Length: 229
Image (cartoon, rainbow, N blue to C red; front, top):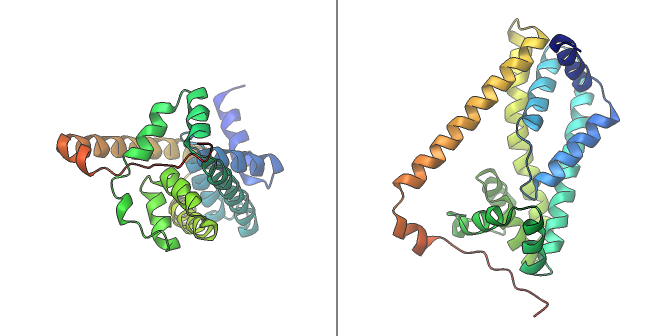
């Protein structure tokens, strides 16, 4: 199997309303709510589908179907974390320990720098908080406060914003630029790699510039009451 054939298969896979594609998006988005992300896959799907929509290779219904599958995955994954958090911190710590992600769990729950600025009664505030890396802490806190509706609406708002960015980029390229479908896949990988690198560098710079004592005294700590005690 040569590279050109493999790329053609990828393009064909995203261009058809295949149930396997919907299941893939559902699973990726569901596990993503636990912080288990697969780089490139979801972003590439939205870029490619947006490109194919702009080039009139797929219908809007195709995009709606895939997006609905992804949204269901996010909602189901968040609900699972929401209910698991209700049993206290011990099950979560054991879960992340089995995945060798205990350090990651501690990081996302302690380093939510702007967490105290989030209005937990506003779905819009929760949605924007999710976009800035506070997905897991917000889910756990809203679970402790029994605000399921606010969480669901926040997920919906954040998804619309985040997904639309990538779909719009692909749509613009597909509608205006003369780019072969196979080349679009390569351009997507290059663009996403640049985004990852820029994000990584910005975070490193912010951590370097922030005083060490400030990170200790002002970082809010997420505490989940263990109901088994």
